[in-house]
Length: 138
Image (tube, rainbow, N blue to C red):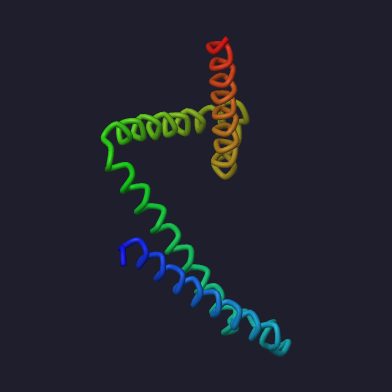
């Protein structure tokens, strides 16, 4: 058997185990008494959160490992990713003081307005790049 088939089989088995655990915990919670449901520390709810956190960790690990493998397989892609990451971080660095200048908020809401400003800047950059590509094509 190939290595990818074994990994795929293991992933299916693990997904089946987590699915069964989630269904059992959900059924347990649904058929529990109201005292158990209203208790913040009930076992079924904690179990479902635990399963969710494990799935999140596995998913993030798979994405990070896959992306790292693809990045390291080609030096050109590594260079491009570093450039794009630098540009993105530059936009974030620019958006923080710009949000204070435009919105004049205190430190509590400045991060929120900085995120909104970064979104506006990224939207502006994407619109300019789309317009540029259309003009260049014609």
